[in-house]
Length: 199
View (tube, one colour):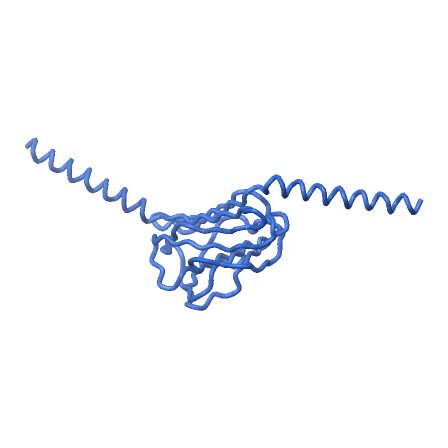
């Protein structure tokens, strides 16, 4: 009798362990970081997506890499992609900047546009598969691109298909802040001299 009870308990524990592993691998997270690297801004994505909570729309070709903070838009890479739609819960923008094309792009192609609840991944992508890519904006800064530093979290799907996309916009480098402050001070000084000259 004790042996049967032990076997049942072992089987139950085994089933719970398998369920825990399946639950952990079903959900995924895509991490997008935006940071100043030298004189450039680099947008890098890494992670995976669970497509179970999204609806397939079509396969198409992705072109025009770039960033549009005002409507939460980002395009990385070029090539064939599968597009999905769904309900994304999160902020509507990452700043006031308009569309800026990237100077270069590498890695996997993807597209994320909050304003129309759209997400594109490499064609034939399988949920949970790791992928990565990046956009580089030469001679740019977080301020020049119109980005507001902070963390922006988007969730979609539910239950075992729940997933998230996290966008971290780093605080500008101290040199950029100094340059920005000098520029503002110069504008204020020029305005003051004009006002003095009129008096």
